[in-house]
Image (cartoon, rainbow, N blue to C red; front, side):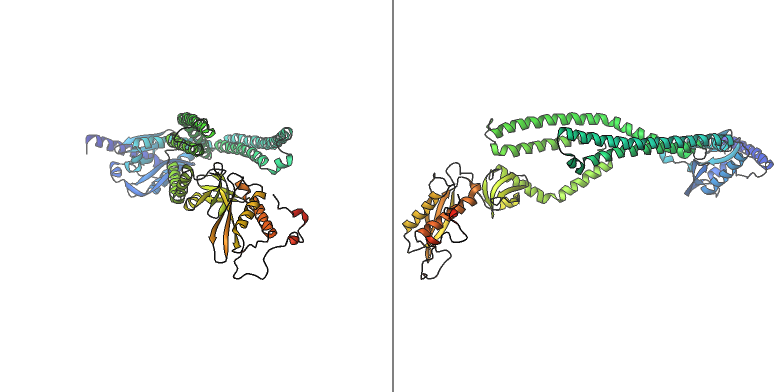
Length: 554
C-alpha cells in the first residue's frame, strides 16, 4: 500500500471509531458499515439497481453490490440512518468527502451512504464526485423539508394558502364558463345578422350548415384550454405548498416550463427555415403566374408558337405548374420544421411506399392522358364516338375523359380505355368540309332505284337541321339476295342534335315511301307478300295520332 493510501486508511479508521462511539452512546441508532479500501475494492456491479428516496425526493441511484450487500439493502440502511437523524432534528450540515476510489456522504459528521465507481453511470459522463455532490444537495433539501413538515404553524399557513388558491381557481373557472356561453351567443348572433344583412343566404340555410357548429366548437376549444391551464396551475401550486408533495408540484411546473421552453425554442429555431420556405414559395408563385399568363395568351390565340397548339396549351400549363410545385417542395423539404425527425422521415417513407404500390395503374392512366392530349385526338366540345359511347366531350383530364351523351348521360371513360379503343370524331372536320352521317333502308328490286334516290333526297330536303353544303347523297351499298341497301349520307348542322335530327329524317322517309307506295324491305323477307307492306295515306293518322302530327316534328 502507498503512503497516501495508508494515511487515508488511518484517517478513516479514526473517523469510524469516533462515529462508532457516538452511535453507541445514542439509543436506537443502527450501526452502518464504514467504507474502507477493502469495501471499495469489493464493490462490484449489481444486476439490480435501487434508488435512495427520502421524503418523496429521489436522492441517488445505487448500482453496486458492496461487501455482499445489494443496492436495496444499502438503500434501506441509509434510510434508517436519515430517519433517525430527522427524529432527533439533526439535519445539518450535509457533506460529502472523497476517499480513495469513492465518496462518503455524511450528515452532521455521521456517515449515511458511500458511493463507489460501480454506482455511477459512466456512459452519461457521470463521476463519483459529481454524483456525490448532487446526492448531498438533494439530501439536504429533503431533510429541510422533512423538518419543515413537522411544523404545525407552517402546515396551517400553507393549508390556508391552498384553500385560497382552490377558491380563486373555482371562481376563475366559473368566469370562463360564463364568458364562453356569452361569447358563443354573441358570435352566433353576429354571424346571423351578417348573413341576413348581406343576403348571402337565409337563416335556415345558415343554421342547417356546419358553420355555426364550427364556431361553437372553436369557442369551446378555447374555453377548455383555458380551464385546463387554470386547473393545472392550481394543482401544481397546491402541491408545492406542502413539503411532502412539493416534489410533485415542482415536477409539474418543470414539465410545463420545459414544454413551453421547448415550444418557444422550436418556434425560434424554425423561423429561419420558415422564412426560407416562404421566400422559395413566393419565387415559385411568381414563376407559376408567369407561366399562366404566357400559356393563356397561347390559348386565346394571341401567341402562336410553332411547337404548341392552343388545345394543348392548357394541359401543358398544368403540367409545368405541377412540375414547378413539385420542384419547390423538393427544395423546401430540408427547411421544414421536423423534416429531420424520425417521425417525419417515417411518414415520408410510408407515403412513398403507398404511391409505389398504387402507381402502376396511375402511371398507365397518366401516360394515356398525355397521349390523348398531345396527339390532339380529342378536344373539349367535340362530338365523338368512343367504343359504344357517343356524345360530346365535356372534360379532358389526366386520368379520365367525360362524355355527355345525346341522352344527357355523363359517362366517365378511363384514358387507358380511350387509347385502347377506336375513337371517331364527328366535329373535327365538320367546320371544314362536313362529316356525313349515314342512314340506311333496304328496298326490293321491283322498286326503281332512281325513284328510291329521289325519295331519300326529298326526305333530306324536308328535314331541318341538315346542311346543303355538302349536299346529301345516296349510295347503293349492297345488292343483297332479296333487296338493295340504299344509304343516305347527310351532314348535320349540330352533332349534338343528332338524335332529334335523325328522328325527323326517318319520319319523313317513312311518309314519303308510304305516299309513293314503295315498300321498305326491312326486316328481311323470303318471298313477296300478297299485298305490299305499305301504310295507306288514309291511315297515316290513325288513333291515337292526330292531325297535328301531319308533318314530322322539326
